[in-house]
Image (cartoon, rainbow, N blue to C red; front, side, top):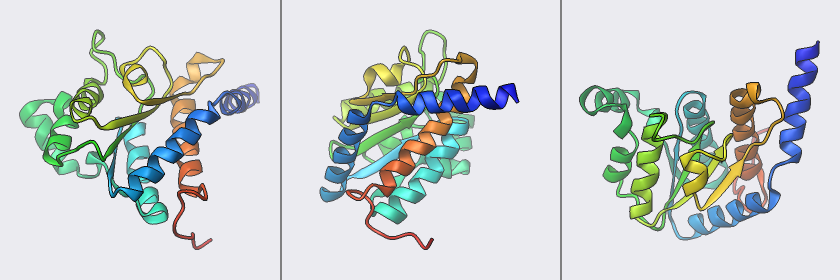
Length: 194
């Protein structure tokens, strides 16, 4: 029972600490993206990759936003990993898609990448490439010292008391925030069946 109470109290605290002004800025940025026929590229690894895949569906279906994620094509990801290594799976995808200033790169990550520790270098390379194309970058991360947080135009930091819960709470709040975005009246274009 103690873990259950601790887990939910940390979730509640994290939700209460979200920067709502930044979320409003993301909503405006996504509305502008849709009006200018830009594309939304979502990336993440591990559980965040699963979140990116699910979010693409919601942005396309509910918001009429042209959204993509390279993680939906496991054949392409593993071929690139086999031939070039895991570090280039996202930036090479963005190059092929000709990402540009009309588009947005949306990063889901717990740590946000760390070059020195050689963690999530694929996210770092994608962010670096997107910056060369003047693409806006949004991130939802659990750490403020990672590359994504420091190098995004809008970074949402998931704060929590119990750092042992950083991964599950960060990934849970990624889901919570993108569902807030796709159900927001400014962005939601199509009704759900339920």
